Length: 349
Image 1: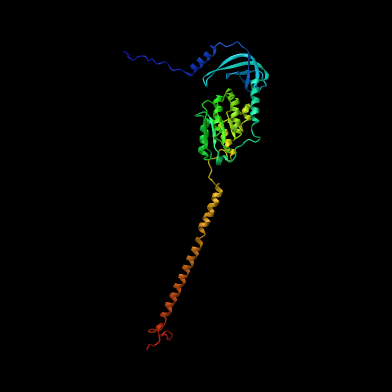
Image 2: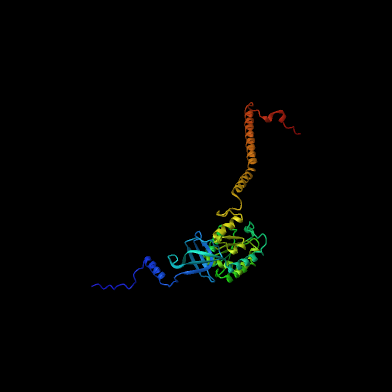
């Protein structure tokens, strides 16, 4: 008799089961049958056939069109179509897509027009030539990074600081880069810290187009203007080709923090991608080594010549001594050199 109790564990689930659940969920929520969707353009891609619209809040809807539309960021667009929930595997979730044949552009929204006027007024406060990155950063400057805690941007900057010892990273953490009040306060806290040789790098905030709206907030723009008037600023939040209003008030708009670090290295005079170099170029150091060898060899030559002269003189004295001994041996027996008249001592009384 088998006494093994049956297992109470649930059977293992496969990925295909999860996908089936997501597909079932996409059919359950009641959706409108269709109609007219109106919103402000965040961005247009796919040769004018795809884009994102936003409303008064942060909610966004993706649109897909059969016919392309000519529109830019800030335009009001109307799309006649039907909604569709699209299941995503990574990350797992649902996304609303509004599908239509075509769309109609009603021009720039009043909200975007007011923001653009505010940014342009702030930009007029900047000097004609704003500070730019140069070699002074290597000797008397710091890279002050405004980002969220534990961000990829800070990890990249730390790694660059280990490779290039002159690059001094200094983080200024913002708890929520999507909150314009918090971001403006963080930027304001950097103002008393920076000098003309520093660089302020703003990175993070999310890759979605809706997350870029914070960088066009009047408070954030004002804080950036005050920083750019004092030192170079870099905005690295992605979508640099989306013509953000903030691009008018920063020194360098760029896509990623890693690209910003490469920009800092090049503008400061450090060839990008090369490891930390010695204080002097290698050819100069090799030339100095040759000069050092020559200097070491200078006192050696007189010493060698002196030794040769001494040895030569010793050899001559030895030869002369051998010759004198030979002459004494040739004299008659019983006669010595001391018996010669010239060598006789005077008689004593």
